[in-house]
Amino acid sequence: MLVDSHCHLDLLCKDATALPELLDAAGGQGVEHLLCVSVSLERFAAMMQLIMPYPQISASVGVHPDGTDVEEPTVAQLCALADQERIVAVGETGLDYFRSEGDVEWQRERFRRHIRAAREIKKPLIVHTRAAREDTLKILAEENAAETGGVLHCFTEDWEMAKAAMEMNFYISFSGIVTFKNARELQTVARQLPLERMLVETDSPYLAPVPKRGKTNQPAYVRYVAEFIAELRDTSLAGVAAATTDNFYSLFRSVPRTTAGQV
Image (cartoon, rainbow, N blue to C red; front, side, top):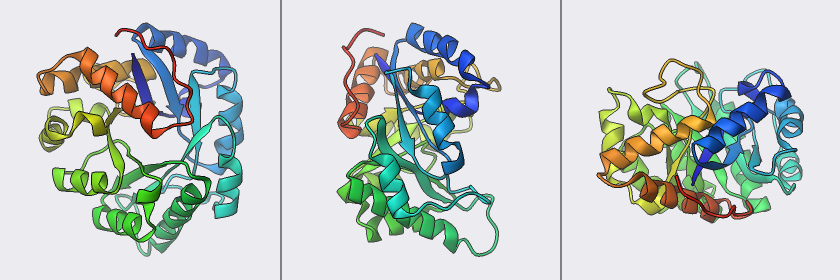
């Protein structure tokens, strides 16, 4: 079986009626569990309402680093929201300097609050990092993020950053980007990375993998990511699926394990 370790179902579904069809499609591709990742406090309640009827979906709580003109979370607020059975992680959080201009200290402070909340609530972090390698690793180290561990999601960096993250108790998650023709350096990382530190994801509705590139992404397409990585590593899809699924349940320990099956 497979797990989509990072998707945004509330951004993918225009309304609740769209979700059953997406879950059926995912199940048809062997996807047994999905992690719906929070991007803002304003959307959190609606996200939870959407997923609650479906035990195969877990969730996180956090505010995306890109978010401006949004409610700033406090450590206490994040801890309170994370102290729910279906909330298995804090994030997504991190740093994204790609579209930011001027002083971005607000991003760094927001990131630190998420890490402190994760340490207090003892749940792992979901980290987004773009054009902010040095500061991401620096803050993770300064805030002792290794205590909780977590995942660098939608990884697009090099082997050196992957190694540094793994040394701090983090997993590396690959999205559809790894299937893109111009992602040579990332594909090298996917070949080298120990299978026991790997996750796969869609980040849907974004970044649909080849052969669906350009279309709206969905959790069913995580299979294409796993298949591509299996080909890169000259191994079986079943092996990549089993390892990444085991890794997901090891990291997100509060997620109830579904009976394993075949892909």
